[in-house]
Image: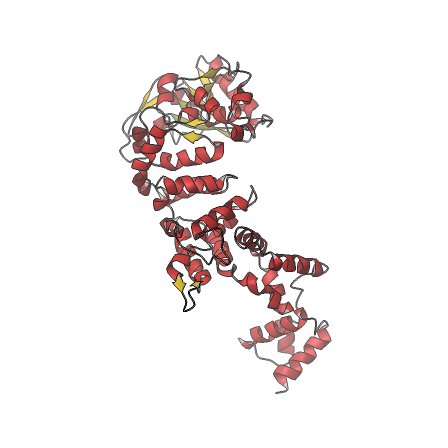
Length: 461
């Protein structure tokens, strides 16, 4: 039967926020593909995530189609398609600039590698639904009537805001341990409650996640921490025992005390959670990672001085080193790793900005990671002592400096130095840095003055 018209009114409050999206044109192309399969005498249904998202009012990013057609029959209808997954009944076709996964209804054999079934048996829609991970992902939709085909209770779980594994949860997680972190991702994205049986199995099998490749873990983790409800995702990862296989160093933040004068909110873990909550919904990945890791070295640098005050000397520098190790372990790109480490390394420098000379301040503000660091500083202060004077100072300076580039073009080049009789070498860098400082401080603003400065300071001696 079609999905009830009052579903939107009954869905859980967080999911209701997603309603109102328009259907993307890709759905029309998917319907044309389904029609070609149907015309050839095959059953064709939208499957999995696209059905779930549509029912939640979210425009699907893509459409998967499940069908009774065998792989060779799909290829006959769509010649030239990608048949890399044909052994598992999966064909990738490309139509009008979009890619679509067409999969033959199947039941899976044993998962000997903990990722893929060793074999598959082509079957019908009901058995295909029962091999999937969670009930909300086991729904089908008739592309032509909108009828929802539900063999696993996913419709009711969607309406009640429930995340439930299909069948026996432990079996689903043993088949593919990535489902452990996917459970947290779906719970984070939808706001749904994980059923007790699924949650208990997740906690019991959490160690299986260590068998999953770092790249697959990273991709799911990124989707959790870039979600607007990222704080809940992190709390679920920690409570479920999954963080042990992602960033085990993060667990040491729990119970790590901070100075009550500057951190009345509590330990480093609570502080970090509050920061995650304060970020904008669309905060970029590198910024979120820098928030997660900015205080990662506070536990190993924890000390109490002779006056009984908590100190964490050098936690910014050590934190950058630890962050690099963590991000490389999870196979993040060099650019993401470099940006995050820069933000972690610099986050304590914001306390000194009001004492910086103009040249140093302009160089500080001209760095590519500075805009994200400014946001890191904002949520760092807001979640703790609440003092935003350095942020306000930097905002006023940005207005003051807005009329010209923070780092203007140099007044001289290496050729100019050679023309003055200087030999190329390491000293050129020292001279150019000195000239830039004088230019940024406003003491030298013309080429003639720069030439005179070099002659007087570096040649006439």
